[in-house]
Image (cartoon, rainbow, N blue to C red):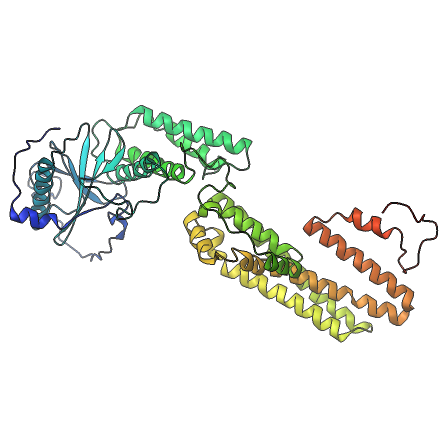
Length: 490
């Protein structure tokens, strides 16, 4: 489109220019409206809406049309040399005059700056009091742009590594614009837009089927449902409803491409690969302490937390799996703790150590209580979205300790029932010493030690063969085996 280049701005226009602000399609305030409406009874006139003498229509300014978004709200579109879209209520004469004034101002500004845009471009306007917020959307290059140079931080754009990376971020915001205003697009969407989207989703399905570390944010089943939906939409590309959800899917995909550095030199090819943020190393002393206290269970949780938060990007499918496993672990820990607490009643019939009974009951009670509290406090996060998970992980993340202490809290139910179980079965040491003497007591101690080592090796991956090999030379009672050669390898 071409505009004459000889025009002078008035003082009024110069004043208004100071109140013109750039935004993107995510800062339109679309979902922040909080108007309260009041319903009331009205008179339904004879033949209302059916006969020629129905209510008079409400007229809009010249060249403007009203469109209803599939979600239900109205927006307005002006089909002229410079198309304009806005959510400002143009049925209000005062607001319509403001929009008209700002459109004239921006057109004059474009002329003064000798800005000539090729292709299909439209202007978005948002009016608040005497201020105007705007951006341009280019349908051919699928991007947003502005009349001035702006720092990306002022535009609330994320940080980027290259100009092509910036284009990806702007492309996401372009598709969000189309999602917000889908009803006025003449001719609808090109078939290539739909075909490319289906190809992206089909590749994601294959990627999930052949890899456990796919970077695509939606799982295989969800992608299949998307593909089925899109295949049923091929004859409806000029329908605003279809355009809206295709645009939303493209916006989500461009957001995913931004985070994995799609098309960049150091693209993220695995979900567990960090390319944006260099994570600090775990502190060895705290890691060792929490691992010993929790039978290495906290280290498992810490590793899983770190995998969930690589580059501070959270996958909802992985988060849901993590929460499901955690809840199952907490439930099983609580059931075991209850069972072992009930077994304490058997101690009433045999001599027992009150100290060991108190210790085991204390640990088992902590296991039960922590299980209940963890399940209660994380109930909403169990089915939470990726944004909910990201907010939670960013809150508990520590630059110094990362997720170590949260992982320790998550491991308390299982760790405490391990300690409680060990203390409970240590009662057999007391019983065997009273009834069977020192030899039997030593056997019980050795058996409990082997069980503890077995559990420890199962949790931490210790190779028991090394322990058993080193113990072959010594019998359970501490006597040297006479038939072992002195120079035999250990």
